[in-house]
Image 1 (cartoon, rainbow, N blue to C red):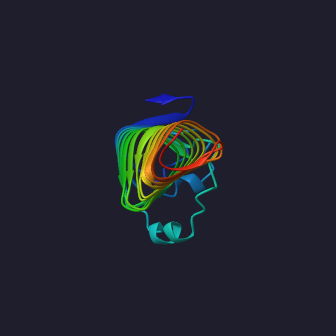
Image 2 (spheres, rainbow, N blue to C red; image 1 turned 45 degrees about the vertical axis):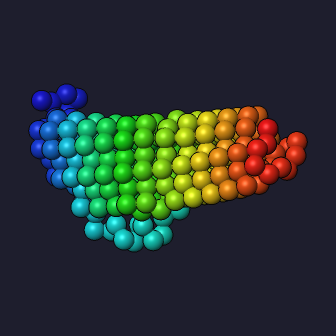
Length: 212
C-alpha cells in the first residue's frame, strides 16, 4: 500500500529505502538504520532478524550513559539480534547479544549489556543493565537506573531515585529510596522503608541486620 509516497511491505531488507516506512511481516537487518536520516519513523510489526557486522565494536566502545531522546525505529513483535544500536522502541520480546535502545517494553534477554532510556516489563542481562527510567523487574550482575520503580536483583544495584525492592550483595541509592533493600551491604542517602543485611546505612543511622 502507498500513502503519502511511503510504502508498506510484508518483507524488507534493511537498510531500507526511504520510501518504506512500515513492514507487516519479516525484516532482515544489518542494524545500521539509526545512522541513516530517514524522513519517517520505521515501524516493524512482526519479526526483526538482525545480523549487525559492527556488533563487537559497538559492544566494546558504547557509552552506557548516552541516553537516546528520540525514536527512529519501532518494533512490535519479536526482535532477534547479534547486537543493536537503535534510537528506537521495542514492544514485545527482544533476544540479543547486547542491546542499546531508546525503550524496551515487554521481555528482553541480553547475553551481556543493556543500555536503554526507558524500560517496562521484565529484563534479564548477563553483565549489566543501565537505564534512565524503569518500571520493571531487572535481573543482572550490575544494575544502574536514574529513576527506578520495581525490582532490581543483582550483585550490585545502584539507583538515584528508587521505589521498590533491591536484592543483591551491595545495594545503593544515591538520592532517595522508598521500599526494601536486602543485601550484604545496604546504603541509601535518604531511605524510607526497611533495610535487611549485614550492614545497613541511611540518613538516620548505620546499623547491622535490620535498619529503618
